[in-house]
Image (cartoon, rainbow, N blue to C red; front, side):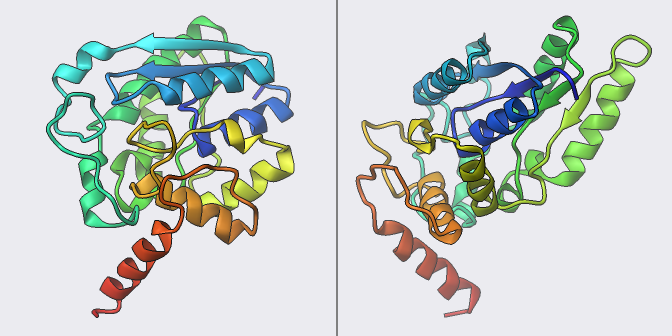
Length: 240
C-alpha cells in the first residue's frame, strides 16, 4: 500500500484508521458521504481529522438516496427513533442503513482508481458483527472479490480492512499509541450538542475506553447510562 483513500465518518474507528495509514506514509485523502443522515457532525469531525493530518477531504453527496433508505433510524426525517441501549441489542437493528458500506465502497473504489491510489481503507471492526452484515468478514472478502473483477486488467486497488478481527477497545489502544486525538471524534447517532451517552454507539464508545484502560475525553449528557445498558445486556444473556 503506497497511496490509500480512507473512508472516514469522523468516529473513533475511521479516524484511527486514518492515523494508522498516515503513520505508514500512505494516506492520500479522506472520503466522507452525505447520505441524508440525521446530522452533519460526523462529516465535520472527518474534515477536522483531515485538517490535522494535512490531507485532502472529499465529501460525496448522495443525499438523494435518503428517499429510499427510510427504513433506518439514522436517516434524517425517518419515522424510527434512534434506540437507547447496548450496541449488541436487537433493537439496534433499527440503525442499519441497507447496503451502506457496499454503496460507499463502490464509489470509493472509483475515486481511488481515478486518483491512481492502490488501496481503499475501511474501519469495519469485530464489534460491528453483531448487528451490521456489511461489516462482517464475509462481506469484506466478497467485496474484495467483486472489485477484483470490476477493475480487472485496468486498475489494481486493494481493500484494506485491518480491524475486522479487532474490537473497539483494541482500536482505542492502537489509536492511543498512534497519538489519535479522540476528542475531535464523534460517535453519537442522535447528533445533539453533546454525546447523548445512551444510544448504541455512545454506549460502545464509553465501554471501549473503559476496557482499554484509558480516560474517555467525551462529554456525555448521561455519562453513567452505559453501566445500566451493559448490566441489562448481561442479564438477558444469562436468562434473567
